[in-house]
Length: 555
Image (tube, rainbow, N blue to C red; front, side, top):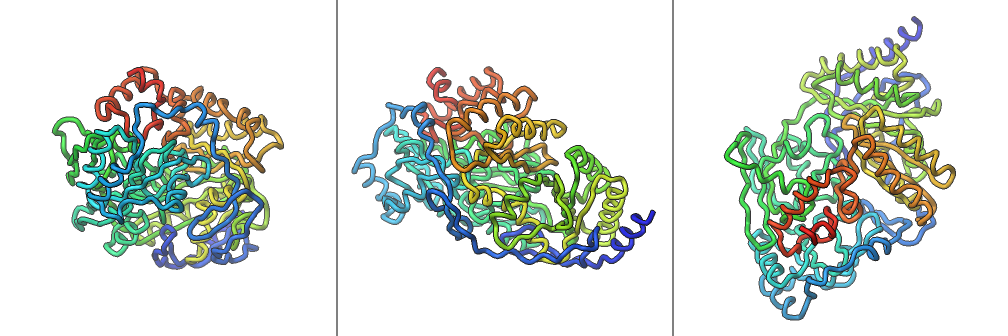
């Protein structure tokens, strides 16, 4: 009873929310501090200076340089052979591309190409000698028509923030970077429909919509670099999927260029259109293997004024599941994010990212959950959330927690969750797995992996619990074949056994192209190969990715 009185008294100290937006962060707000325990220390806004760690080379994240472990996967190159049907670039090809793009649009500078050839994880590195930068759809069409006639392989590229080697060359493919196609074409305030080019950076779209009183239905940690064309091509998920669903629902239309240069105008802005096959869905999530997305029409929700964020602690994974179930029932329509991380994830962030502190420093907990609510009635939403938190604490589902009081704290809370990939990069070598697993089974995989690896690696788990999406990360001092052999194929076999997906939101790319059978039946894969052959008979679009080359050669 005393615990109830104390918690209730503290909850009663809440004040009004002040909804704001800060670049690089999600929805932020001002709020009187409401601790569930009285010894909480106010957080400071994270700094952007980083400490270099022992490693091999340097990477850049958000303009900061730091040393990272990297390993170009020679084993992948040794098992994937360059398609002998593909031509190699000649001086005549260069002259043609300069004719249609000008000198500016044809990049042969070695330093720029080095970045474009290397993925964000520093695991995959191609050897392309040419990057093209079209500015309009017609230029993309001319490029592909020419490359198809010459059988020159191409790789579409946007912000190059992918994690499975899907946006970089495997060998010497021509890079087609759509970053210069970055115009917002139209926005209808009545319908909330945004039409833009594929090279628009996600964060720029978020800022634009913020000024219009709307939000993007998609939010990613890589928002400052990733581009909407790449988001659509990989069917990126992110932090808001529990509220707004996937891009298969948000994207109303798109424009794509096929391998032969044909421009498919599917740039509809209608909520309802049942005239024939909805072909846009072929290009959402196909990773540029069927065509290059050049324009997108997307439905954006109106901005709501009442936003709250709680950072909570649970003692076991079962409590996290119970909390999710109760949040869906009790918070309902205002629930906009439900993220979880284990203590290993929190520890790696606190160790490797400057300026962050443990939001619940009084004791160590096994699991942490971030719950965000977004609504239109401040008093209603506030009362609803506080009642939910009080009930969750009294029932023992949560053992501690805080509500963010201001922009700095909200920024820090989200920085902990969104900073995990960056912290893992700084920690050393990291094997990343993006899996969809039934929520009740999700953490069993983590525990089994820890038992398999023992002290050889640090197994870190976090993800979108509300979507059944686990980000399983194995952190080690360096990459070794011995460690990899203990992780794979076990991780894929376990996921397949439990009818999960080996790629929840990152795509297949090069890393998982030959592992698609763990998630899809042979008949389904053969049908995919037939579609690929129909739309790209010369297989020039993003070769060696998504589907096993052996399947494509047989189809």
